[in-house]
Each structure stands twice: as structure tokens, then as C-alpha cells.
Length: 143
Image: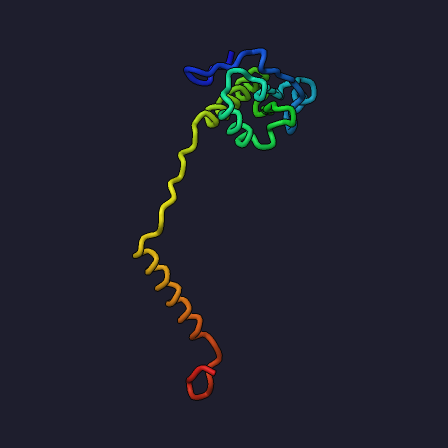
């Protein structure tokens, strides 16, 4: 059982792990030992996650979210299969913890009168600088 917080627990039947050989350097070990872990969590079918959390989780997971509603996390950082399993489970827990937190709704505000005036004054000043650019005639005036 994977503990997310005080109220949410992920049961073992919702998780499945598959082990493969890791990529990259590692000598003989990388060629014969299956240390990489592919953790699959059936998020869409999980009875322990509320619908709002599932929606946010889908957005946060991005390309790790599959068509059938599962999250696939690959871990191959270490040469230890056990440590890679722990890393993958911790990544999943962190992802779910992020999805639990509901984003604060933004309250629309109007710009203050002072900020509007400062913006217009800056635009006028910038326009003046640009207007002064150009060819200068022989008597020192703009053409």
C-alpha cells in the first residue's frame, strides 16, 4: 500500500511494475540485470482518488498519461532494482500530492489609474525617442 497523505492510500492492486534493462553506461551489469522499473498506476479506475484530483492529475502527468487512463513512470537512475522501485513510487506519490492541492482561483482586478498613466507616459516617451531617429541633414535637422 502506497500512502499519499492522511486520507488517500493507493492499494497494491492499482499498481503494476515491470522490470527491464537500463539504458546508458554500466558495463556488464547493464547487459544482464533488469534494474529499470516501469511503474503503472491505473489512475482513471482508482476508487481512492476524487474526480477533481484525477482531472488535475491528468494535466500534471502530461505524456506519462496513457490513452486508457494509466500513469506510467520509468525509473532507471540507479543500478539497484529496489532503489529504482522506491524512486518510481516516490515520484508517483509526489505527482498525486501535487494534484491534491487545488489551485487558487484568480480574482480579476483592474489596473489602477496611476499605473495606467505611467504606462501611457512610458509609451509617449518611447515614441518620442523613436521619432528622433532618422537621417540628419547638413544643417543639423532631421529630414
